[in-house]
Length: 339
Length: 269
Image (cartoon, rainbow over all chains, first blue to last red; front, side, top):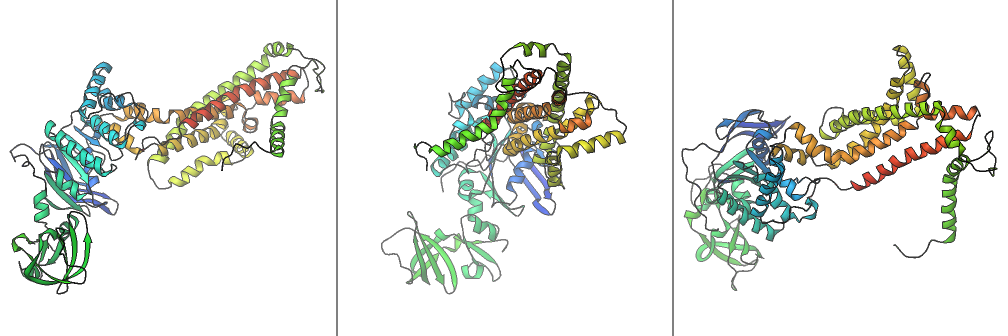
């Protein structure tokens, strides 16, 4: 885990975005189901979940493309019921970037000012500035189709930021980029967010991305929020079996087996917290997979399957061999819910 | 496999034959516009003259028919552009019960033989006691012009990503601004192409027009009448030549315009 700055201090300021009992049903489909959520002013907030979990619908509810079927949303303390997207002080970076194909890059970026009636000279100057902020100075006369995926992403970012929104929404902003570019953009988004002091809300299905970038993460499943907390919280203390499994594929084991609670309760034990220990429990290695920096061991401990991640060594047991393992009970987290 | 080999001789002959078969009659029309013989068409033409162009220009019935045709084509095209685009927007942009049925029903008028459209319109007009006028011709033409515009527009709407509209609204554009600054520029070439095709179709339409025109003659009807009443025959050929030019140019333009818009707008993923 990278060292991070502490999230912004909780103050008495109003939250940037508040969900109060918000539901969005499409016929029988409960895309978002009774969600309560506070997104603090100035934080980098991630909505994490598998596809169809309601995270993107939540984003569209904030942007104003969808209206809740029940409950309501507040943006900086003001109820947003029925307020159309063009009257909300939030802007979106779309998953497909949605750059206007009939305009060049500069006109794309200046669009938000154009519809506000800002003069041509003024808005083009502002657009140039926004482009240099995302390190695309001089690209203004190109068409969107002539840019690479990473460059389009930056244009979309500049276009959304030129309106000086108080909340920036990002829908899977890095999904279409390759790994190297993605890591670079993660870093840049983080820097940009700190420099501008804006509230960023971003949607992702990539748990590593959410954990490494966000101050706080909300984990979604089936239209409901499973857990909200800091990355550390979510990872170390998953509230439910779903969170434990979806975020970092934990070992979800009976609490009495883990030695932390009574039968019937469930506990989460992270694979990297299991160590090979000659004084520990007997285990049989059922599989050994080399992953570069770590080796994944599939283990059988008296009928209970476990996964361990250990540092590569020459004397690691092979598949089929017996070994002994141990874990620090302090690293085992007893979960509130088993499901 | 693509090779630089030249086409074999039989293929060349077949191609030349095909083109000859298609284009020779049209070339004949052009040739007879300049013949000196006015009662019948004889080959080869006994002589060539430009006098028929002058004669044509001085015939008021030609001008009347031409202006009626242009007016009908222009009004039908405008109606088709408005209604065809709106229908296309509804069908491509939203989901509602019966959407596919409506899509089919819109296309139906062009699938029906013109004679059916003509007869049904004529009986409808007489049932409703609507007197024949320019407007009854326009209504007849609008039935198929709408389909042309609709087909062009619906294809472009489907290729234009809905996220573009979301993006425009997100950036502060209201409904009108979204339409004029984002939607219209993205469908403009499709509308222009559809409009030109509709105009050309209306301009040379005969069948539906015969049922809906009453006493007025559009240019194609005028030509049909001229053929059975031989008087200054080459005048018909001069007019035909003009019609070919008026209809071919927009169709060529439409072809190049739609070819330009092959890419899917806004779906760069």
